[in-house]
Image (tube, rainbow, N blue to C red; front, side, top):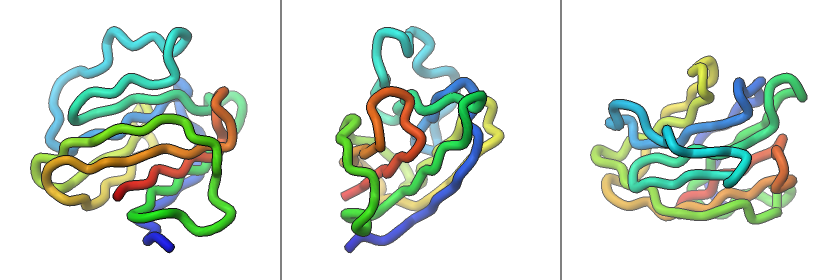
Length: 128
């Protein structure tokens, strides 16, 4: 079983979360259209759709290794996050919700599991 790195349950403004290397500066994903794609992945950053705050809170868990039984099970997307110094940050568009955690420097493969592919309210981000 994997290690739970961090978790939160919160209203996610604008219905999107950003996962990125904490060294990222400047705007990313300015051409992303959530009506066209559920996520937008770059080398050191990804933005993805979740349930908007007006519909209720979202529960997010970040794992190193496979999550415990009972975690969400619907594959949402996968990718690789480049981390210059081994720190990543997960936050909403207003930065009201933020979680910073350690990863390995360099490429970090991950996949995202949800309870639904349409505006998920439960999300598990799995590294390694």
